[in-house]
Length: 64
Image (cartoon, rainbow, N blue to C red; front, side, top):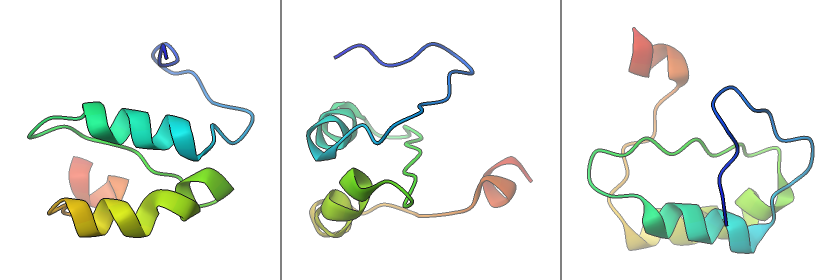
């Protein structure tokens, strides 16, 4: 799967498979944006939290 280019905004839910793919490809220090409005992300979010030690934060906190 090829991620969208910089500044691209998805217009549809990428699906659970795509979300799993991108999270699995993320390494230490990676920033992964998970939009909980998308059903695919909601399906895999509990597994993301259980499998890794993420540090969820808002964009304002990250950039602040």
